[in-house]
Image (cartoon, rainbow, N blue to C red; front, side, top):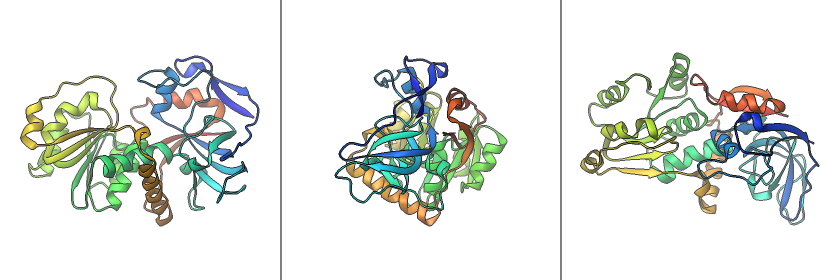
Length: 320
């Protein structure tokens, strides 16, 4: 089979397309024929071997994909060849024509959802649900601010929040992104490159602030986020590229909380909750992943470069 492999850590240029043996399922495992693979920011960290992510070399990148079950191993029940599935992780990496998985990493993909949309589900929608509901404890009627609402996690959080009775505010950095945020259900969209955008958020809430903030770039915004928290507010840090200075008095006066999130820390029970909710949202049509760019598998380096585009929105997908 064709697959992307990295034999050293580094940037996008260390990835190579190779011919590798087809995987075979063992007990409790399944092989999926990949129709689309999702590209996530965490993939770039794993490729670089930084921030605690250093897969054993050589390795095939990729955590998310969607496709068709091709073979199952002994002891696998409720899963048969020919079924459409999306993946929440794998054993062999998803930038490939076939991928080996534990049976529990596979979830039904409705016919209404394309394979490319299915490949956009695993990491982004799990992170968004965990941030909103498991860590941020968002409740209907509260106000949530989603920084970077045009990315995979941001759009997932926006859709989930809008469908759950939250008043949603989102930020983006370009006109098309602001329009997308509004179209996906946000009450207001703010330009996060505008130095006054958080003051505008405060004015929109009539000085009260927001109950939950989902922060994709804590190294940029966290210090100022504290000033727009409502009393008892929660900030969930989903992404950060470095340190930041904060004033603890802002946190103290609001009796607020800063909560970290790493989707891989979710317990088995948490993961079951996430994928039950995700399945329901897909079947009801309230969750509809936005795919921006589809590239052939051999363009994996270009796909990683596309993640750095500040005018990007939606998901980048690789198609074997």
